[in-house]
Image 1 (tube, rainbow, N blue to C red):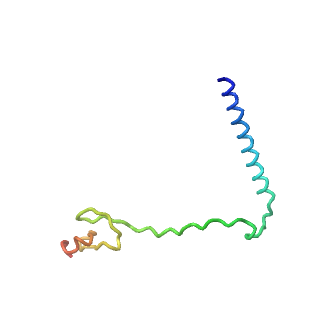
Image 2 (cartoon, helix red, strand yellow):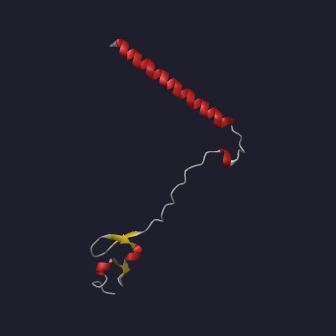
Image 3 (cartoon, rainbow, N blue to C red):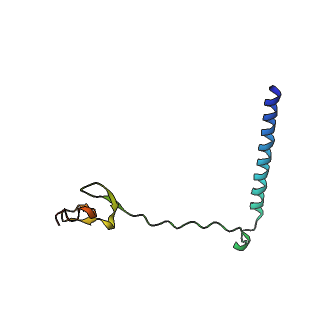
Length: 91
């Protein structure tokens, strides 16, 4: 059992050292690349999906359901109501 544990520890150490060596090689390659290299020589970066603009959600003052501000109606009392309560609310 002691031999097995020792073998696992040595194996993990060897793997860790190889990983550290690979990282240091990558760092040295990045440091030696010219500062003015052309964008064509670099690998393409993945495009980020454009985020939709945030919509303001407000609660209906009657039922409390949150909806987009554009779909709510503003009553004379300054309250926002949803489509279902437009007719019920005093204008």
